[in-house]
Length: 126
Image (tube, rainbow, N blue to C red; front, side, top):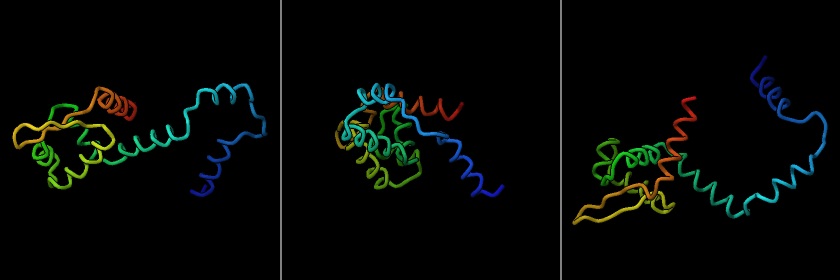
């Protein structure tokens, strides 16, 4: 079987053999579906997790508060690259920062982020 044939077979397995809408199920789910903007915001939120550098930063911050120098050393990357990613994480409210003299320390904004990372790790380990 060629790759194209395998993909076509997988697509056919995902399609109903006849058209029959289960109105009661559709109505039930429709009542609890979030608004379009909320779903767009959720998609943007999860896009942030689509970058391995940001995942590494979040994982590091789940272990300890760190400054840009610490993170750059840990990940063997430049400070400007780390700063850029931290800016994205800050805009999405995933990290907080505090200034201590001339040093800025970053931490996860709340326990939800650590939970998301842990559940993701659990999922890929299954």
